[in-house]
Length: 337
Image (cartoon, rainbow, N blue to C red; front, top):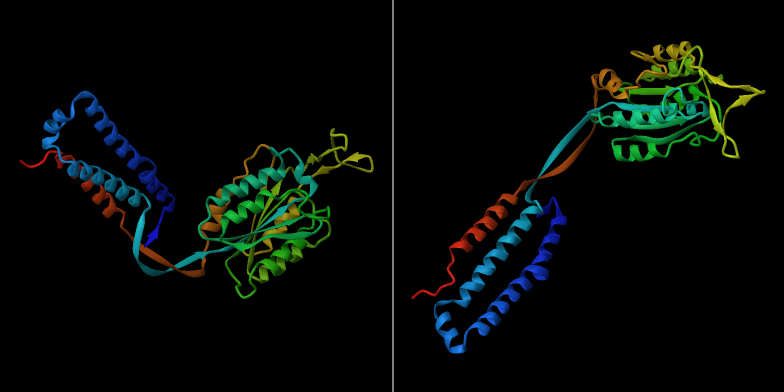
């Protein structure tokens, strides 16, 4: 037997800890009250037609009915049958920029936090795809390998910050190469997507060449640029005294601008690639992007799993429990004369 809700077994402890003591107390209290109200001779006449055995039987029927219903709540199942489940999907690697410029607040609450919220949203729309996360700044780190364990992906995502990578900068090309060479399986030349989320200007990591190499390996890149291509935004930082200021270089405030032309080249270097720009005031709806570009794309069989399917049998115990409770009503406490 397999139980779908074994926590309901705790209800069975009510029988010895509550029901039995209550019935015993009621029988005792009833006897005590009668002895106060009537003499022993009168009690013999009053109780001549009352059957103690039938009173106990009625209590047993009610307790047995409760036990059956408690067992039904555990969702008992048996008669297991092996079933092979085939899963289809694509391999999706999210490249998330964690450079300090992602702290810019032109996209609320910040570029990085808004990106993380968008990734959480898309997790609710996944349809069997395997997901990986690679963070990058001056270097790249595989934070989460390809997996269908979406809870693990969400846990990993929560820990990502601008401290996730040890070096500053924005090396988009290195991140693409990391995903292509270390995340994706080389033997599969199709059904692979990179979602590149960045706000930065690349620091000579040759991202277009990396994208062209990824295209040869069957990877498609969907590039998402966060921020304005013209004006850009300042990068907020906190001083050791706790004051808020903005990042400066050679005495001048640094303004982070998106290199849209470079990101377009990166995306369109791959077959079916796409570039999407999200400027301040627009909504980053990654769930819609996933539905339109990835969920509708061709999928491959990722893996097959053998699962045991059980027959649900809780109905038997509910029916038995109700039958016992109803039958208690029809059992008389009187002896047959």
